Length: 48
Image (cartoon, rainbow, N blue to C red; front, top):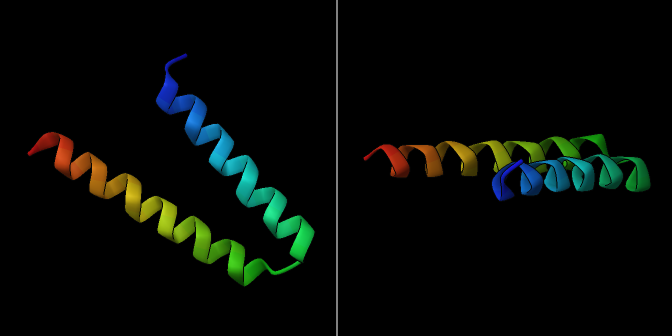
C-alpha cells in the first residue's frame, strides 16, 4: 500500500470521527466535498 492510499484512509477516518463526535452531518458532508474536490484537482494537475 502506498502513502497516498494511507493518507486517504486516515482522512476518511477523521471525517467519520468528526461526524460522530459533533453529530454535525452537514459539516461532515462539507468536509467530504472539499476533500473530493482536492482529489479531483490533484488528478487534473497530475494528468496535465
